[in-house]
Length: 369
Image (tube, rainbow, N blue to C red):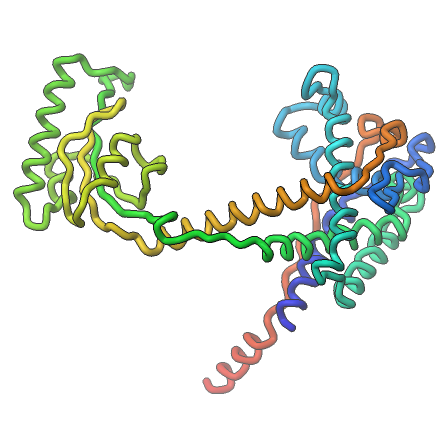
């Protein structure tokens, strides 16, 4: 029950923030006939009202971010070409229409997956819609197609899509073994081919200097092998060189491939490599562990996530292929992003209610004292 309650709280906070950022400028030429059809997905019709509200919601979120990043005015942003003959406005409209189509497809498939909105979720959505309608002027609502039916439809679709997404991923059957994700652990040092002169400029060593560096690296190996337990840390301090360490496999980026390959093929924990030449310098490696349990578990989790995401995307692609979709782009183009700015004030931060159990425990602790 607590998990469900928390989910509803998150829904309220997230959706309320998105909606309360919308404050459309009341220009009569931007008031659309929301009943017109933008697209048909199977037997469902996507109305211009639902599409307009969805796009305005995204515009309010993205416009201030992108204009800040790219140092553009909103007009410059939406008119910028993302490819030959296609503006950012056109690209975003089409991209969001595809997202809407997917939401309707998810709703059509929800029942077969045993997914439906709970009474608590519906009540939460209704509360958010009531608040949004109460806090916005009629003219502004008209511009963003802020009618109850459009907003309810959109928020129900978005909420349901999360549950459908979870259900799709739950049907995936990843078979990731420890061997697939095995991570080892190593220590290593680098004797770089670059140095810094007195003025702070980077300089590449000469051939003679590189050969001297190789001899230093070989001396380092000999010294490590002479210590008890092949202690790389003590020797690195003596040579005034930094000791690095980390989990790895042969596809990691912690070190060049030559180093990873050599380290991976060391057969015993505590074994030290010879001098390994890579593009940026000489390396010496010590294998610390043949099995890094924590890193391997993290790698398995990552591979499972990747598999489930790929399964989700392939399932969605298949569902789209099986669904008849008709678009009316001339209707979609009536949503003018360039000509209508949407203000995005700072969202109100709503603290999450304290867990009842924790509060009771705190009270009991105070009484004991």
